[in-house]
Image (tube, rainbow, N blue to C red; front, side):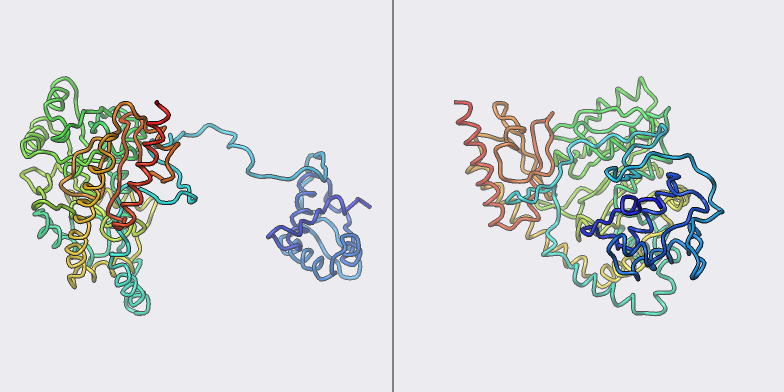
Length: 487
């Protein structure tokens, strides 16, 4: 008889039930040809005694194996490895070797996805986190949204249609959102021109897949939103960076490129450019629209935080201007409600939206119908407008308070321009201080940094005045340490 006490090793600290550990050990022994077809196994009583277990545990393991046709049990006679199993090549076995099925990489070549730059892992031991520019969920109407969500899950009529027609987005949400976008942004559109997605990133991905290929050229700002650049590069397209200054992306440089290259698309964030937060000037907006018409390229307009503008009414989107459907407009509710609420949208000509919906169905057959219905209610009853009015006032106060703190305490170390809106300030370190040294000496977690620009984004919207003061104080301590080290 084989030494089953060495074949079956029980790990009592494992979360896997013991009877399943027995079954898996026997399966592995069969696959390694240690146990061959027709080989007899110990009776449940014998094996229980060998392993110092209760007999019922072994019986449960044998029942599991028999139900999967690994063994044959003849009551009161014998237990044997099934004769139906093919003879496998014998493998060496040892009780010291732990079986790890997924310990190696795939044995074939596959496409490699590069890690996006600027993404930093979160260290929860840090005292405080400076985020990328997120809303304060303590102000968000998330409770009302979830309450409505629960209400819909209890309605029979809604539950029957919750997952029907969600590939493009439930009609009620698209109708409410179309009205909202027409009213707030001046977009000439209807529900048919809308696709509801799982956030702006999905919209960017879908657009890239349908518009770009290895022969395409797309212009982006420099610096740019890194995940967008990554998506464009993954299509094989040539991604051409164009400098972003205080007035936004350089349209003269775009025009020069159009004269020597066939440009298929330009990705632009005109409202509060990411990461620098600058706003595209009116002159450049008009020129960009004119260039798009003249050279027949598509403008992909990412308007991730349009709703937050403090000093005046925000510029209307490029998509609201005079164009012939060559502006694809992308937005999201993540910056309004909560980053975990993954609902975004895309506005484009109906035929393009149909094809985006068809492509999306290949990887995601539909969205959360309950959440989309709940969001439609939040828009229709005016709660979203009320929240935005309250949030704008609060975030402006926080921006101004942070501006005061930065000028009073960090002016020897940084430079910045106060943005007219948004939820973050782009801070550049003075040349004698390096962002890598700041991270080493700072007790804060800083989510978005740019080593090349020697800068980082200071998200202020999610932090109270007390938290903003604490964050600036910690930055001040780090800069003083860096200053002392230089001296």
